Length: 247
Length: 300
Image (cartoon, rainbow over all chains, first blue to last red; front, side):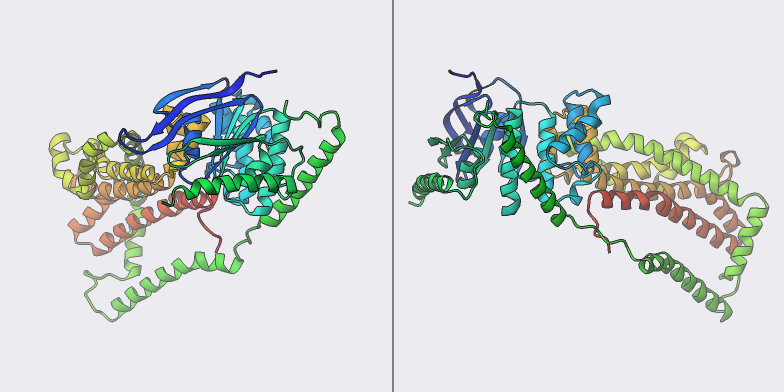
């Protein structure tokens, strides 16, 4: 049974100026609807650039992107607007997606409850911890009603305990909502912990060099032997790729 | 569907969710700090300290008068200035003057705000426009607006139009420049977040650009008010016409003409008090609230 791809990238290349270096080189990728894909690579592999292009913040130099559904993007920092409360941040996203005014407040509260922050509505971003802010950011992204969630190292700035918890949380939300997730990270274990598929990119220029299917069952844990084993294999491949740049 | 094998066994899924919820709640509780309330003593000290400074100035002033460092028509005592102000109040001049000046100041400031805001947004967001117009704006801001009084009198005569022209030329550049630097200081992340949320064009200006630029904009508004107020006083002092109604500038000029130093000093003090009151009652609370809401102040 083949599902229609949610995202289909063909021969995508990106350079920032006509004589500048190639950032992404002839990248081809299909992501199924409802799939969770982790994208790993060292610095300079163009993984953030790829998400910017997919989210429409940047444009491709050549190649085509077909998206069956609209996407939204989550950043490494929470990017919550500091002049609005957590609830109002979500309500603004609802408003800008054309959600009916009368139901915005109730919907925002519902989304906060989904990320287990039922009392955060009136709290300001600076009053929340980093993990709480990222959960509000997840709720805000979900409020837009888009089917594709692009995540750019969203947990990189969090402490390890909070990050592990947010892994569980994200997977639970993904299972509940059936979203398509493209998750960019430089943390190989995180990629294996979360993804159904891990895609490894080379750096300068960014290309896909290998991919692995991850068929472990949930609940997975980042410290499980099978996660560690696969991460080990991917890290070795990644290190070989990085060594190539030494000469 | 992603949750393939787990859906037929709802119970473990619920247990997993419960584990996440309790863990989240524990972590959130550990990571949330309740800011301690500012101590009562510090609050009292903070409100009393400025009064002490004023008392000190009055004391030095009184001592200088008592030592007869200068004749009283050069340096009247605080009580003489107070008596002069009481006299103006009894004659029905003081309060109408103060209210009339304040009304013109507020009106001029409001018009300045309406003119400066679109200019600031246009120049803040469009670098080509800015390259053309920013030097002009900065030049206007550097120029003391009192320099415009003679020109305004020639153009508009001794009318309210003259007064407002001078106030506008004083306040508009400050407000516009404040908004421009506020826009310059917007972290790019907020603009990107706004785009991802779907804010475009006007909705981006309304929901992202203006609130994100607000701290700089507010500083421009405060400075704009100060410029509006002093431009107004300068204009009132020079453009004297009974048809303009009473004003603090006129009151000051009357004191000069009568050689009444008590009235001159009294008028200066009232002009200062109005300025301070506006700052304390309008701008300061807004600024405090802005900083607190955005977590830019740590409770001391």
